[in-house]
Length: 536
Image (tube, rainbow, N blue to C red; front, side, top):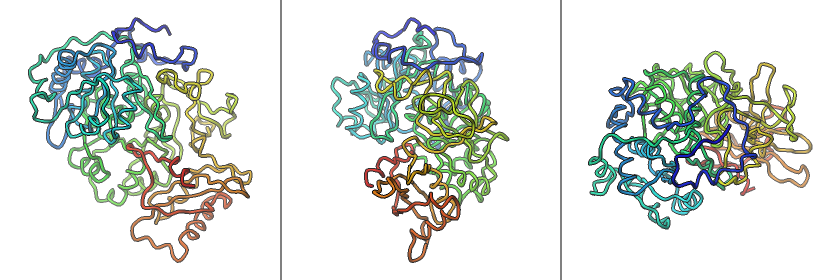
């Protein structure tokens, strides 16, 4: 595919795409993926709905207010006018967005894209040093920030950064500036393959990388996973816990509902209890959160009114079979497992409805192909372990090609996950490639041991890593969080070790068990095993 003429005046992103030979092979096998050369995804998601009769329909719902599609369109257009007229933004400028999930953050995201900019949405929990690193990597020019989260951005002291705050009462607040601007804006006619967003990896290794995504990529995740797995309609009300800076959250809470004219419920502090209460209060139909959140909901599911839910998506990390079964037993819900990545933008393997097989991630989503390969890139027979390789309409492009060859090989996106595929095309997760533990010659998948530990009623969370050992090379080490009030007897570690031996092959049991009050996680709930390894 040829790269089309860019609409960007600031050519930073086009100039810093990785070398074309290092890109993955892109597939556009579905008719809905044949986008025109010039397309602005903001116009497709927002303007098209407002013009197509959805203007008066609910779009963004909170506990305090509801914005219609016409409301969001007007405010996004006004934000675009502020960015261009007050801050001097030109197409291609990178704009840092900072704040919790709320309507003005969404309006800011659309305003940036409408004006031809590149959205760099950041986790609200990032501190000054982390924000400075993001700004340096992306060469950010402008920032739109919730006034409650301004302190760390100001402390970052980013050279030359023009910032506008929103949600406050100051005369130069974005909400005040926007109110005086026209409610119509001529969207920049961006190319389908102009970069519209930079998404930073969530830092499970502690070293973030910027991934580059085009306008067509944003639409492609809606036209593959959402269209063919979630199958949303205008009557759906989406909700989720992931921040919009997390591509899982952006898809579930903005792109997917708005591709079909549906509504989304936004919550700033999405604890499991708050999400469950919102389902009852608002009649949410499509919910998305991490496995740990679903597990935390289990004690309350039986008494909750969750009759409105028709689809529940679990992603961010692997969904243990024990968690799936416990949720199903408590509520009848059949969780949709999925694997995606920041590099691929969203989920590319999943299953829904009657196609769900507990313990399996699912099949390649329509529009994607996947296989399991050996270290030399050859496909392995079904039933054998190997690395997951994926192709589709989205794929990895690291800013400046940073470590591009570690993710893309021979046209395939190599996710770093170890999988097994069966004869029916179902993919079952085994471990991250660096989570495979080789002990006395045995290959042991850490998540399998975690799964066994989670079957014990006293275990709330578990993480398994390999720890150095002179005799065995490595041993299996578990870090366990117990449920309140759990009594495992005089030797709690032995109690759990014996339990694991009763669940899986005894050689896989954790020879070392450490108890903790909590496990280290990212802002999106993803387990940071590297922090556990640092202490081993």
